[in-house]
Amino acid sequence: MSKIIYGALIFCAMVMLMATSSNAKLVPNPADNSLRSRVDAPVTCDDISGLWYNQLNSEVVFRHGNGRLIHGDYASYVNTAQSQANSSNAAPSTGPLVGYLKNATLAFTVNWDNSGAITAWAGNCYVDSERNLVVIKTSWHLVRKQDSLADSWKGVLSGQDVFTRQRRPATCY
Image 1 (cartoon, helix red, strand yellow):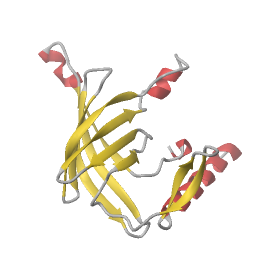
Image 2 (cartoon, one colour):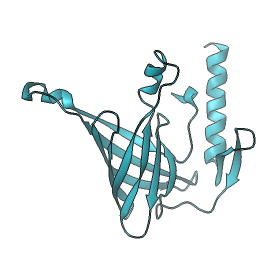
Image 3 (cartoon, helix red, strand yellow):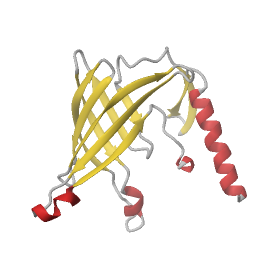
């Protein structure tokens, strides 16, 4: 294994250990763009409001008021890396988010601004008490328009996402 890959794996392990070993969280330090540790109150699934990241570092902001309704915004960076090869200013796919949260079970949809596709997620919120970490595990279906019934199979993509409040280093993938 090359020294660069080995170093990246060690860095990834250290960051994840620091971020999840206690109730300390890594948060952006606006003063110098570095990460700093912040200690928060014990974690729960009662209020998921705030910024979350999936395993590909796409960003979702949940706003959860009183009741079951959640809304927010989603920015997907899935295609950005491919787009950056062709353009220096590739933007993420974005869209508004609406959904419901009840007893740690949630479902939400995003209507993508730039493609007309719609993605629906459904899953559960879990508390990992050993690492004092909240995790949202979901399955999703992305549906996009197809012009013919014969091509309808191309119109649905499916997968899973795991959301946490910590951005994961790109070297972890």
